[in-house]
Length: 254
Image: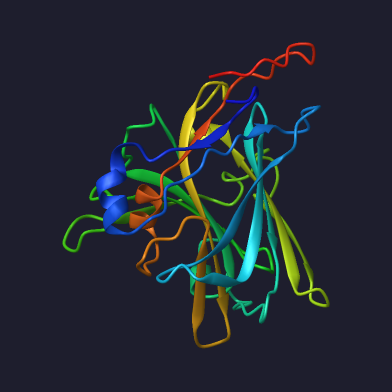
């Protein structure tokens, strides 16, 4: 693994359910400290349609890096057909019903741990946001089992916490794009030192024409379900942080 890595992907313990959902085998994605010299910011693509995993009509690129205090995400959302949102919605309203980009992410003690709680973060083209910890003990949202949300205030979800919002969003309707810069404090995950920590995550996007939605993901299963707990746990994306060596030391880390 390349030095200064924060994120890698592996199948790990959820392989049986992943096969049931027909999830593709994930690849390893190295993530680096933000603004690190001599490295390229890691990116993943939201390019698969939920269900049949055909090419998503409105693909996104998610760039990921980390600091001592935060995980930084940049969503570049292309081919946006509608920009449809409810302008009356505020933080933690049901913005997931319309046009959003989403991250599902959690710190875990090791690659083979199947978590039951994770952070769901969403942002719309008008910078409406949603942040909540999801409690999902069945891991696949089994009917009749507990499932709940623990909402997080916008200022609490921001890094630094003195800012009013965890995201900053701009739109370019002429180019049919919108971009969101997101900063999530590591303190939300009880992480004081990011080096050496391990995470799981997945990334999603929806479009909305005023009536119907389309759904895209980085690693999509063969079912359509939101919140996508089954997709998240069985499309195991693992983040691992490693200290950045000096520029003189370009050795690879395992």
